[in-house]
Length: 238
Image 1 (cartoon, rainbow, N blue to C red):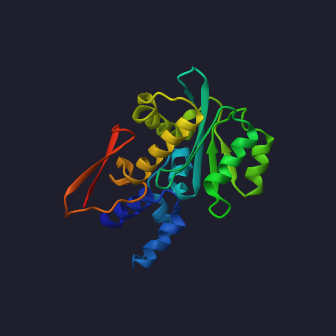
Image 2 (cartoon, rainbow, N blue to C red; image 1 turned 90 degrees about the vertical axis):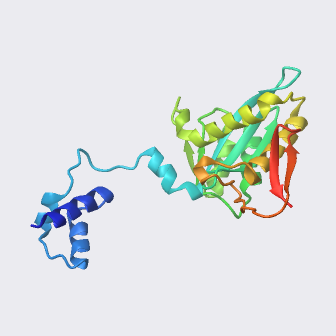
């Protein structure tokens, strides 16, 4: 068999780990290469174990249908904890909702999901931390609207990595620089940050675009507008 065909078989088997010899053989036939299926199996790349979909692959393949949520705590100036809930979409790393409360009961947590997504834009999957705050009320709400609940494994925050990373950004870029007075103040700060994050802040994972895509501006005078009291700035042309 020519070396060129052997290399092609190997390259096809490496590039398509879910393909077996029959599938590769069929592709070769469509390319006008007459060869036996047993010969294809002989020159395919060998694998130590059957291919399986890892967690990272699952997140990448289903990003547009995945919503992630996480709870975080913010101390106020009076040393009283206020709880925030973040709901984000994986597809464009967009913040969908911020909820703030001093008493994160299961019913309140369940309501945040419908507030964020409504009843017409329900995600297919929901990734969340395994927390006792999610009670039976929350589970019934998720099932009733057709979302497939995916709580993370115990002591495995990496399984909700996008939400965890986003909460880290919220702390580093916003909350750590603001003295929070209470629920109302924290809600105002978080909503201001959400507007900046979704519409202005660029992301390396989005090829330096914002979650709500920003068009490049090439003409006009550059205008600088402060955000969050000058903590960040928005640059536009007018």
